Image (cartoon, rainbow, N blue to C red; front, top):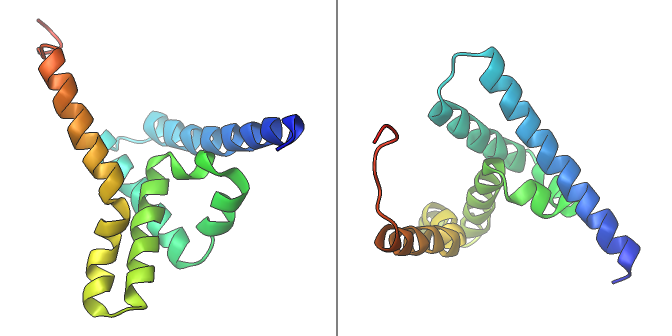
Amino acid sequence: MEFLEIVLMFIKAFAVGGLICMIAQIVINFTDLTAGKILVMFMLIGIGLTALGLYQPLVEFAGAGATVPISGFGYLLANGAMRGAQEGLFEALTGSLAAASAGISAAVIFSFIMALIFKSHTKYN
């Protein structure tokens, strides 16, 4: 890859990822929704956009800028389910878990390692 292509790829990822984060910040600032509800909303938006065929072009354009935010996790789940549905009903139900298993496993393993290394405490202690 040429240097300018790499720089353009970074700019596109930063712009799309930043736009997603900006929308989330606007939702946080102007609504009374909790963080959990906002996360679920963005994940469901990612699933819905994938089902409509609108998220894949965004992923092809922005790469990690579209796959790293929580809406990208919804895209991953929906994409796995749709690929599994081509093989059968059971695979449609398990396809999303198979697609996301590496990321979920890494999160659990690294969280466990960090819990062993660092001592957790409440915010006010």
